[in-house]
Length: 469
Image 1 (cartoon, rainbow, N blue to C red):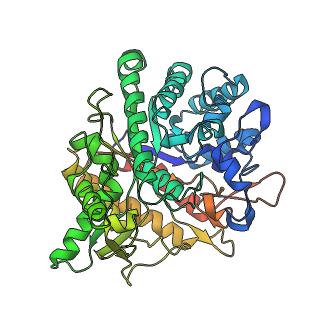
Image 2: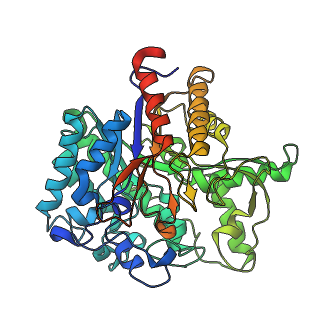
């Protein structure tokens, strides 16, 4: 069913679990700032304490061991390691914390996959323009090289940036994620561009300076829904679906895996909308400079975050002002046959993942793929016996098995989101994605295994005991 060396993991991120927001010399991040402003997050909640993993790492490790994971995906807090975002000032307490986490994982025969950037830019760098500033790319490269040098003897799987499309759009267009900007139709494209530049610089640094000795692999984690035309035979719906996938996945995957540049369908849509609205300046989608690090080929595997699927037709509204929605000119709808998990946007479509994996194989030169996030949310009354989520994991992992066996797709690993309930960004603690429940009302932040966690542990155990090839 699964290859013997298949990576079975769960994922978390620093801001969502660590707490200790100003402990031991950590600097503030944009999410600290964002959450401390009223009205930004559900219930004005914040990640000041979250799961308190900064103090309770051993409890997390017990959860990881209980599930029988072979891999654990975590992120480093840039501001915990480098409080002002630069290597001028290294916080040794932060280094010690992550050294302990990595060493404890390896002692437990669990391989770490480390994300360098999971939404939490040091506030000191935001104050200098953040991801809109061209200089951010070399600052990120310095941070990445510091991490490769400090931890790369033990970390062999690296993600530079998690979900650049979400950072760009939700943080700089919609304003519902930190830093909370609403600079429609311009800032997100600039941010995405600088994230790609930063990623490429870090990959090239690893490739030229660290790879031969450390023998690790580096990629960028891209989120995408599976999209298909609302009416399969309608040319306008088919064209809209192509645009939707270009603006979601192609925006970052095309430059890295196909041409070294953005999808032509994306650039032409943006430029056509600019002309229509009388915006005659240079293209809002920046161009890559030939003097800079090449973007093409800067991923050693394809890292995919998948949650749900959509049917697509033309028409996104917003025609009278510049905005991504108007550029994209698509409307996404849910199929009425798809069940909904706790969140209104999260329709349960396990076979959408298989279709998306096939699309990635065919479009992006058959890369090795790690599914770096996939999960199911619970909202409302707590259910430790979460039968619906159990079924979700069973069905989804079964689709991954089919993708490997029947479609010949090189899927190397699967990471459930998330190891435990945590701070779910603008939704605060109102949404629970964990394999373990965390009691946030209890000072001990006690962790309790959900039924879905038991189910996932069974799947892993069965796979690793050789009942699959």
